[in-house]
Length: 289
Image 1: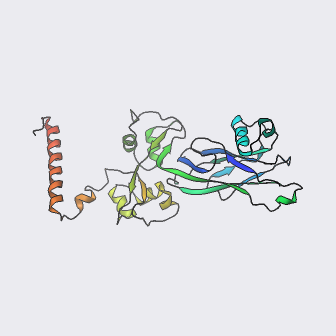
Image 2: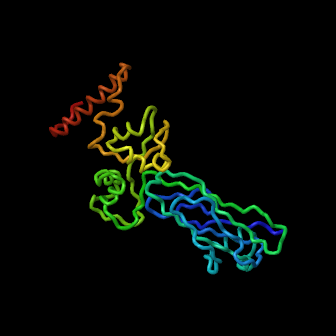
Image 3: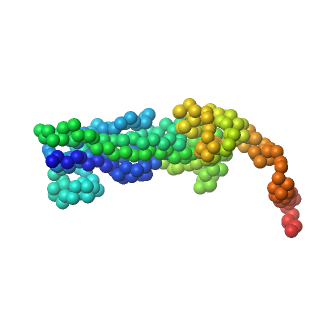
């Protein structure tokens, strides 16, 4: 019988060659190669055919071509899949297509499964007519609150992409010795903090609390912006680029009504300790036990 084709991807960056997860970053293209092998070594031009189901915006598959100069790891994969020796494996037809996805800046937190398919071109063999394509599915995941620098840039230039300021970006990335540092290509930076949505949180309330706007929160979080959903669920993760100059003066705990006296006494003690610390630092005097 004519066996089905084998399909796998190259291992590049954060992509699992046998499926699993492909981790992407805002600003850095996700690229890898899809390979397919005609398992019976049938010499049918263009077999097997490589295709992809629905692609995310900005993604593309290069035209298919025979892997005439495949790297050694490709032949190792063919041998492991088919149990063939090196000489036999190299006679098999290996097809390839290059995949590239330029991740939109509004896709932070994106999660979706995308599948590639290898379809055997059966030639004159009627036994494999109508065979279901062999899938290779990868769970695409775009890192939340992380940006990979596209080209040499400054902290201010990166901050302007996400509606924040250089002070916040510099403060979030302690690896940067100076806010005037020149950032190199593919360097990964934090562009905000991940906040876990609480009970009663709304997009507008969070925007007011963190000194930002609902539009900025939507742009930083795919499930809010691209899906046009303002409904938040407790436990949901959101990327927040806060601006303390315009945020709420009090935290939620400060503003909440008080009830438990034990908690109140503890909290009053913490506040007093911090007040004493600030006063001692201001006066440059040692703290008294």
